[in-house]
Structures are given as structure tokens and as C-alpha cells.
Length: 342
Image (cartoon, rainbow, N blue to C red; front, side, top):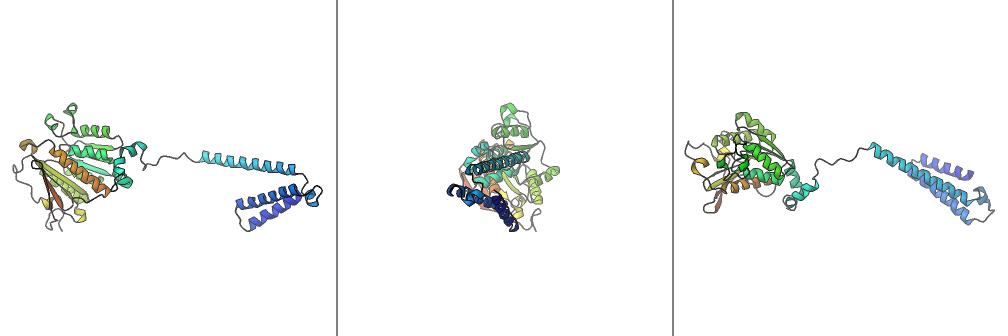
């Protein structure tokens, strides 16, 4: 036994001097132990080496068993300490829950969107101005698509005449502010999103609100607000998707002045004279028309946020529902534009 201890000490010292890892040093001791067991098993009784090793194989096996028990105890103790000291793993905030994965699977299967694109939608903040005819389908599809934060601003309340085309509202919400009616419908459709309702008009005091969002969609029905929204987007360098409808016709475009594209006022330099362009309340509107244009707005928003396909920068799309015709015309930035010109 004494020879074994001396040799083991020498091996340990050599390992320490050479900087060998702790596991390597124990491995050398283990090889020495196996050599002793082999010697005791092979050498005949009375052999000088066997006598110097103690002569009994059973005693050495008992020593080995005790060493195994000690190492197992130490390993278990280390594992227990790690479990106590390390905090339990938390679900990453940027991960999708199983219910979300199931909900968005049709998006994730699309090559142009996939998991990274759906992640971008979840991280996005979109401001929708107007919760009326255009805003209704926009809000519904942005919520369904999984846009993480959706702001909606509108000063009006739900009226009976809205229900013919503003499909996000119901008869039970008559008299309720549109932003709260829309918020209730959106969170009922998708509980994994955040809706920020602003029951107010978009005026000069609301322009800085645009800076909090990644993308702005304008579905308002008056030119003054459209020009103001455009100015806010140019000021804060935000992309604007804007649409308008009347009777059987609608138009939509994406304005990206921060990328040298035209802004809204480049395309529509002057506000029409009063009475020149009647409102929907004055001229009427086909019920599905805002659904068509609003859905197109939502589609362009998803594309802008995920980088899929080609957007409507530099193009104005005009849809004539009465004759089922859609045409696209090129629009350009104006150097003399008072909002985004040089």
C-alpha cells in the first residue's frame, strides 16, 4: 500500500508541475489502481510484488468501491449546489409561445415571411389614424397578423350609419368611442397583441405621437388631416401608407420621403376646394369598397414590416370597383414640395 501511495503522490506532483488538468491527474491515479488490481489478479501467492501491495485483492476492491462512493457523493453535491445557486430558466421574452406558433403558422410557412418575418411583426409598432371604413379592416388584419403594438387614434363614436361598412364595430357598441370598440374587437381576436387607443383627433398636438411608431397608416376622410399626417411622417422620417375612397373608387400608395420617395403632398400638391370632393356621407360609398382598400393597406403594412415583395413607393394604385378595374400610375418626388422638397 505504501508503494502505491508513493507512486500516486509522484504522479500527482508531475501532473501539477506540468499543469495537467485535474481530470487528467485523477485518470493517472485510476490507471495506477487498475495496474495494481491486475497485478494482484495475475501474480501467484507469495510473489514479492504482491506481498508489497498488501497481498489481498479484496481489500483493494473495497478501497476502489469506497473511492467510487466518495466521487459519486461529490458529484451529487456539486449538482445540488448548482441547482440551488442557479435561478430557474426563464422563458425568453422574444420567443413565441406554442399558441402563437399555431396561430401564425400560415405566415411562418411563407418563404417571404417565415419565422424572422413574424418576429418583425411581433416587434413592430404601427399607428392607425382613423377607426372608420378604412381603419376597420386595417385594424382587424394587423391584429390577426400579429403586429405587436397597434395604436389607433379617432375622435368619433360608433353611429348606426357606420355599421354598413365599418365592420369592426357592432350594434352593441353604438355610442361608444370607436377606438375602444375597435380595441375590444382586436384583443378578442388576438390576445397576444397590445392595443393603444387614443380617443382624440389627430391635430398639431398629436404630431409627435408618430415618433413612437415604426409605421403609420392613414385612413382618415378629410384632406386637412391627411396633409397633417404626411407632415408628421416627413418630420419624423416615418413611412406612411395612405388610402382614400369615395362611392365606387379608391386609391392607395406608400410614401417614403426618408428614402427619397414622394410624400403625400408631392402627389396631391393642393387641397381640393370645398365641395369639390364630397365625403362618403355626402356622396355615398359601396359597403365592401373600404374593405378592399383597407385590406390592401394592411397587406402593404405587412410587406413593409417584413421586407416581403415590392411595396407601393413611387406608385399610386387606383381601384374602380364598379367596373372591376385596377390600374397603377407612377408618382415622383417634387423638388418644390413644401414638405419634403430640397
